[in-house]
Image (cartoon, rainbow, N blue to C red):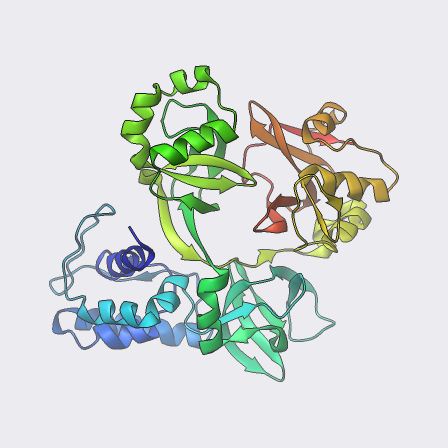
Length: 404
């Protein structure tokens, strides 16, 4: 399914299938208000938009369209036809409105006028506390702009940023297709991410609800699958465990290939939602995240948003996951090898992580490392697209938590 068709299905299913998940819908409210059999929904939509504009609701709060005689709500799987008075919505999608609707921001801002990241502050002042970070090209909904400060919401962070660092409105909508990405969001409490497109394939990782991953390939074919098997050096035993090559070829279209850090993996289409998305702000509070090791956290945070380079060790020009933590700890006089598996072997296991401790992830063996910064978060050199980023420490189930 191409992007326009998929976004069309997302928006239409949202309107006629009970829930629209965010607020980029003012033009949608005006459109559906002209259709007689959804007139009741238009009232709800307009009221919702007014509350968002007034700051009474967040852009992430759901809009509920309750079913009735005038609204036919039917939950359908992707690929099914959703029937209903969708002419106005389809028209909006075709003329470019789909970007705003699906990105869930009624007034879009993109933090692209920064080198690495933009601080989100509690109040509109440079002296106000930092409550979040927007890495370059993160998106946000803009409530208002006053005296050079924009009140925004991005992800789960609501606060203030310097407006001069944002691209806004029509310019932001034109920029969004260039800096956004096709993603899947995990829609179940936890989901096994597989090394191959089979429910019996080795488990690459277990990811939690709400986690978002870039789509590498939506429609997997034989040529692509064979490339993955070769690149990831997947053994014949693992292929046999997954049901054999014939089974994989028969069922591969039930899965989507995603990127987890810098590795390929597969998730079942049944348990994810596909969407076009911008990066979001991440909650971060220096006063609460650092604890007794605030120095190492503050030092690591300087490099947020810097590039990922496989095999690299430069905190400014590019490093990989193990190179990042190796250089951070080297600054504080602790030597670590340039290998996540070797780092896991030379650290002491702990159950109560402190800032600076290392989280090791992988499938079977360790293949990725991140550094704990407190507050249930890690900072790590993730992949070529995201560079050095902040993640939930349990975005994947760690194989080990180690203290250097």
